[in-house]
Length: 183
Image (tube, rainbow, N blue to C red; front, side, top):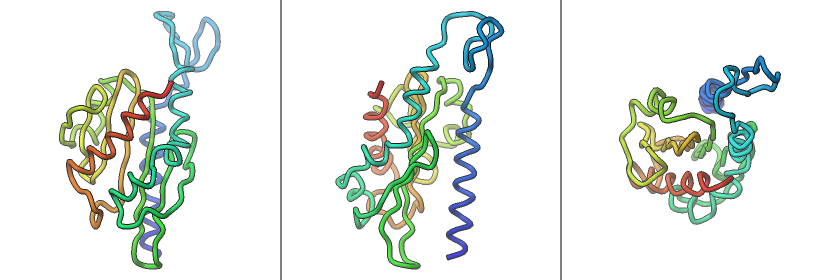
């Protein structure tokens, strides 16, 4: 059990670091608004992006339905909770020392260039039909970009699930596609 707690802590820290790298807190010299365009070029629609990113906290409740979870795990029971304002976690119901399966959904702002420089994307396998670009991550997950939005979903552990590889990524990609449709 201590190994699981340590692994969960490491995974949480890694996700928080990735999410923090995608946030911008610059201040415009012209109006003092956080996130505003400091150079004064085209207007920034960061409020729309911020609103979309905050959907991550509730995405597990809304989009990880019993049929989605049942397609991935042997048992669709479990609970979800917000990790932070842009990330949620679904934890499968499990018997002690048996199944510690989780699904993480994390949303962030980022362009194609941000997406393509991310190590998860660089090491991933390209997928078609999800957002503008998408990859299957090395550990049975998906990361996709559409316009200036990035959706990442991981399933941990990557083994012992009903779906694997491209089939898992396509199922998770369906969730990202629904989330990309949100305002």
